[in-house]
Length: 353
Ligand SMILES: *Cc1c(COP(=O)(O)O)cnc(C)c1O
Image 1: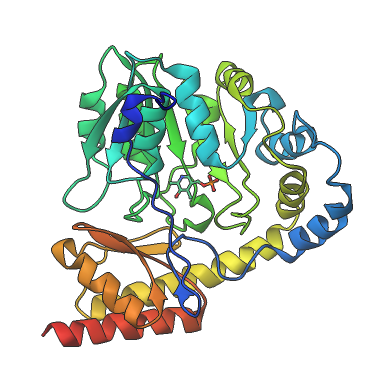
Image 2 (image 1 turned 60 degrees about the vertical axis):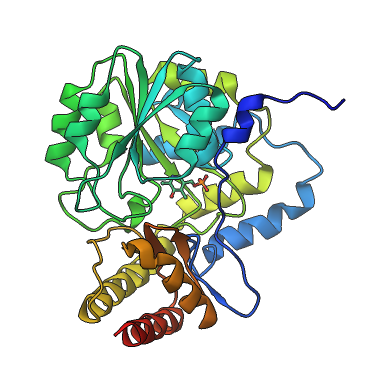
């Protein structure tokens, strides 16, 4: 006889991480190719000799730095071991078995996993034909059992952005006791002047939390640190369900140093945005359908041809993130990495004729 684990875990979808293939270019995980900000590396080096000590469990200095940056009370901020951990804590803090979590689909693949692990019910709302969040359908999907709604903007993996007016109209329709989580993992890459600022909305509305991360634009994916600006009672609940010491010491110093290095961040983001526009333009010129993107990746809705495209890219030493039968998400890398991907995309089109 073997140990009994939860039977429902058999139905749990597995999180598929972007693959690392030695000798190939990895454009599969929305990492920035340029690496961490130089200031963060210096801070990590300096702190390395102190890792025999437990980290600050309350994440005090980083929380204060974030509170100052956004001009909010520290009680409204919670820091987590990556924003994906905060997403899970939010579901834990709001839901039990009979409660529902509404989210767009396809979107961040952690949402269904997290919801199922916590034991809540998931309500998936299909995207529009333009690969964007269908806010009208999401509002209609909210029931008395709904406790939490994930709104991912720009949406992973499609890159599409919600505009301020449509998001505000949606929020007006959400009952005040339902928490709306604005997952803004790619916020720093957004250039559209009509883009909403989740933190600004969270300051004004009592049921909105903005979720951001140091993993993407800041280049600290390997250190695992994200944060939320949330209603006071939500931030307090997050701290209750948090695993003690889960935000490690190097992550804390690196995040603080990164916040202090906004000029380094701006330079890197500008490079990514310029390359994003170039890659988008060239793909469209090659005849691909590519939704407008405000993130550091492009989405190719290739449907049944996704697997074939994925294999072709792998054969050309470029690793993309394929969602079988649906599409491929390709991270914007350095210019030469993007050139390698564009060459693969070009030869795929040629072979397809
Ligand atoms: C990458 C990503 C995250 C999570 O990032 P962490 O590394 O856990 O901070 C959250 N949401 C979306 C939509 C993402 O793409």
